[in-house]
Length: 102
Image (cartoon, helix red, strand yellow):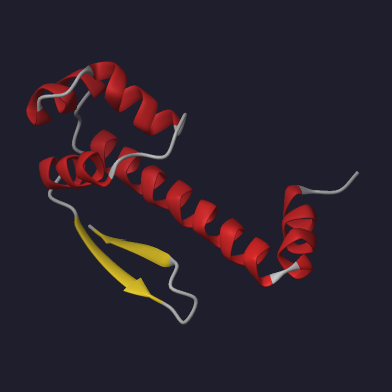
C-alpha cells in the first residue's frame, strides 16, 4: 500500500500545475494548523476566539477543520486576535506560500 507521501510525490511529478496545487494545499493546511496551535497555546476556546473577532463559533470550527478554504478577511482577523504576523512571498509560479511567526 502506498503512503500519502508517495502518492503526493507521484502527483507532483505528473505536471507543474499539479505540483503547485499540492504545495498550495499543504501551505493552507500548515497555516491553519499553526493558527490552531497558537490558539490552544494561549488558552482560548473556539467560542472565546469567535467572540473576540465577532464571528460565530461554527465559523471558527469550520476554519479549523478545514471544511472549506477560508476567506482572507477571516484569516487576518483570527491572526490579529492571536497576535500572529504573516509574511507572504510569491515564488516564480505566483502561488502564495505562508510563513507564520509566533
